[in-house]
Image 1 (cartoon, one colour):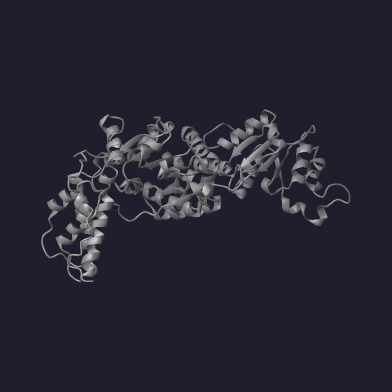
Image 2 (image 1 turned 90 degrees about the vertical axis):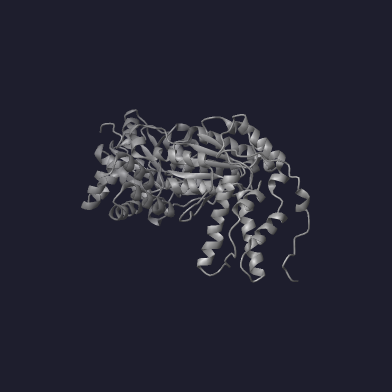
Length: 523
């Protein structure tokens, strides 16, 4: 068997057997595929594979009158010791008890032991056998030849599979590694029959495979709306559209490195989370939000074990987006829970430097002073963007966007009162200086609630009253926002949009401290 990219694991097995290696650990999520693959490879090399399962050892006919209860796990070697072409495969290492493991460890130290194979789906292979430096065979992703053979029975699917580009075939192979092989082939056949273009095929197959993937509680799938609208942020949107080309076949043939991460920082309510949704929708990639609290364990060392399992899973996941929200909040609790935040950042930085998968990381934060300095190193993120409070032109876009969403959209359903006069856009834009996008949206909601309570159409005065009663965060957090802006003015972080105006101290803040206006309301 010649070395080929279509047979990576098989060639690794051949080379290890030629070097005299006797211990192999097969790591896979699909035991059936691993057994079929080992049987096929063993037959091609002139070996016979003897399968030994835990359930067979529990049968009364397997028990011996004297000796250990689970002696059956050692007997095959004694029965077939003279056969030079026999390989032994032990299934489900995690299901063996300590007695079985001890017998296998003792027997392996004897001379003349045939090659042993263990299937380890949970990645917890441990004990004295680990000191023998076993060869780990990764079968998380099926080989190209296995996919071709499985599709050969269906003529149309086989022809469409051959017409796919090498880049698309590689993406499909990575997706099939997330589900059992038989299930993945069934989903691939359905996707090949329903989609004519490679992009549509990958989107459909990615959704179906990830829906069957047993994700940990810490990875929360984020549903995306049909259309994500964001106002302003032209520099960020241009970067998103330019980096989308890195996930195409042309970039694959050019061997262009894929983007690794994006960091968004800015005051609360400026649209960082909405920009993450816009990124996932533009790139047609699934979005997962990481809940670090779900990784915490009660006993010492459990959290670190959860970190290792999580980042090992991320290395095997197909192309997707991982969202780290409120990243600076972890450092606020560094003095509690045995400094688990420090260990999390350590695992995170190591994974970001050595990751093998195509998971794109998006981190958002509100305060850069609470972030570890190691996070600022180039290479872990492709680009940083500062999402500032909206300027005059962006506020105009936000007012029109929320007008279409809450007034015109609701009016078509008969659920919102119409406005009586023309919309004073310029007056609202000037009055909302220093407001974030979330605050402008809340102003619209409260104005609609006020008009509904009075049982009359929405009037510009309703919006103006709510504006007068609202103290924007530009006033309450002026120092922290100005500190973030200094990073941009000094050229340390590029802005997501043009900085149109400075946040100046308000001379009419006293009017915002008045009691809420009761104009037009009857108690």
